[in-house]
Image (cartoon, rainbow, N blue to C red; front, side):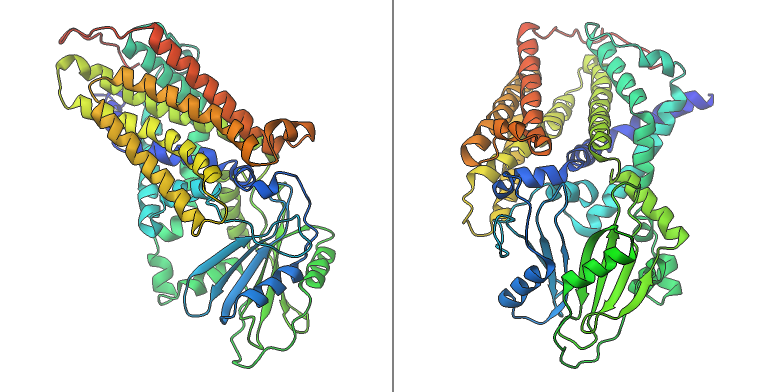
Length: 508
């Protein structure tokens, strides 16, 4: 047995076993490429394109008026082109719980907008499945499986360039799905290889923490502090004096950085005399923001430390920036979106090839595999659309509104899974009905958006707000594609398969 032959089984099972999980990870990561645009769409207050006139001091004043507990730290981020509003977060001392609010840019004073999961929901689903450290480890393991499947797939496909130009959608089921699997795999191979590697690499300190635990006697925060070059000052346990203006410190930081943009501003131990203010630099034109930070005394405004990331940490930031598409603007994010969809299509095609090879053997367990396919491959996009419907239909005054949106997503996905189980013996009919439902949900969202918010599609196009209009345009395109595919399934009835006489196609 040569190397190529030995890789066939590794590619088949190394790609098959985590395929459903990888689909969730890749789909969520693909949507998260436009998480900030989705944040705007899910907040009707941001649809008018108003530029916030609030300042950092206004945000701090709101915090002091509305939060009475002693704080360990608070942090804020000013308006950007993709997020034209102030964001604020804080941690109550001794609780290790975090609170976050976003402020309506239409008022002169900070006024919190109704809470929503926003695009951050898909970002967290992508990297930890909303399961904390356990989910992060599961995602890392899935990423390593994907690396194995990609490398072994490259080895077994001798005709990789020919596969790129081969797609026969009217061939028998197995041949057509194999062509699709090969085509989308070849088109996105460099992208998927880099994203799988960087996705694992940027969490390497969490996956392999032994070195930091041993060398720093379990003090992991000290390890990260030294790696990043951050500044820390011990608490004095004395009352803090009147703080220095945050807007003045931001202006001073811009001057020291020759006009560079400012990102996160954080205040540590704000109620103590030792309080310090960290002002972090932001540069969206580079792969990996430099993370340079200026640290000031919160009372006097004295510059205490000028942090510049080390060479090793800059390399890490470059990998993280490459993975998260934090560079190059909308064109790069659109490319990531298309390549992510290719990854989803590659997984669907590969699993359909595996099914087509075995459906002629009379294996009764295949109906459950098809049910799982329908639950994941169609259920996840449909649940995501249901989440957007929930965002529009749940009243803005509803208590714990973001949690309610999350339950809409979970409930819709469970219903899709139940539907797939009940219709497991009618896979083609189930898929057609799922496509029709997807068309209704996707095409209905722009209409619902126009009825419930001022930033409907026509208004966004009229003022050239393509970032906001792109969400509605994508939903319309997705709905039309679902409708066209549903019509195709109605026009082409399923062909009977004779047990033991399934068409066999070589993999390469």
